[in-house]
Length: 286
Ligand code: ADP
Ligand code: MG
Image (spheres, rainbow, N blue to C red):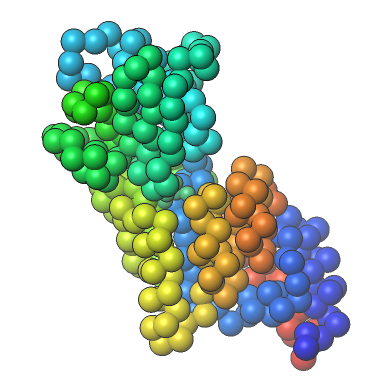
C-alpha cells in the first residue's frame, strides 16, 4: 500500500502541471533506470513544415499538393496537417473515394479514381513500388500515383526548447540511460539524438516494434522504465512501461488515457519536475 503522504505529493505535482494518476506512480518515479522518449511531438515540436517538394512527373506543384492533401485529409498526424497547410486551399471531401491510414507508414487513398500512396519508404516497399531514396535531411514523404513513384516532400520539425536541458538534468539526477524511439527515418533520428546527446536511438520502427524495444529494455537488467510519448500509436508502450507519461496539451486522447502521468503543458521538462516532486515526497513519507 502507498503511504498517505503521496496524496500531498500528487497535489504539489498537479500545481506544477504534472498530473499523476496514483500514489503508486509517484512512488515509482523514484526508482527509474531508463527514460525512453518518442521523438515526434515529445522531443520535437510536432509542428512540421513542408520545406521542399520534388516532383518527378509532368505535374504542376499545386496539382501535386492538391492530390497529396486530399490523400491526407482525414489523417490527424502532424505530417498531414503540414501538407494541407502548404497546399493552402479548401479540401473537397466529395473527391475522396477511399481512405486508409496505415499506422507507422502513411496513407492509401482513392482520389478522383486515382490510387494514391503518401508515406514513408515502408509504405512504398509494402506496395511493391520501385522508388529512389531521397537523402535530404528531414522527414521524407514519398508519393505514388496508380502504382508509380511520382515524387517526394521534405518535411522538417524542430527540437523543443527544453529537450536538451531535460536530457542533461535526467542524467544529473541519476537516470542511467536515455533512449529515443521513432518511426521516422535514420538521418533525422540520428541528427536529433546526437543534438540532444541521447544514449541510444532506434528508428524506422512500426508501432509493434516500439513495443518490442520497450520490452527488451525492461527485461535487460530488469530496468524500471519511463516511456514518454504523445501519439495514438503510443498507447501500447505507455501501458507496458513502469510509468507511462503522455503529453497533455496536444497529445492524443488514447495516449492521455493509457498514461500514468500526464504533462499538462507540452514541456518535456515537466518530467523532471514530476521526478523531483516524487523525491521530495519520499523524503517526507519515509
Ligand atoms: P513517430 O515515431 O515519429 O512519432 P509515427 O509512428 O507517428 O512517428 O509515424 C512514423 C512514420 O510514418 C512517419 O515518420 C511518417 O514517415 C509515416 N507516417 C505516419 N503517418 C503519416 C501520414 N499521415 N502521412 C504520411 N506519412 C505518415
Ligand atoms: Mg508519435
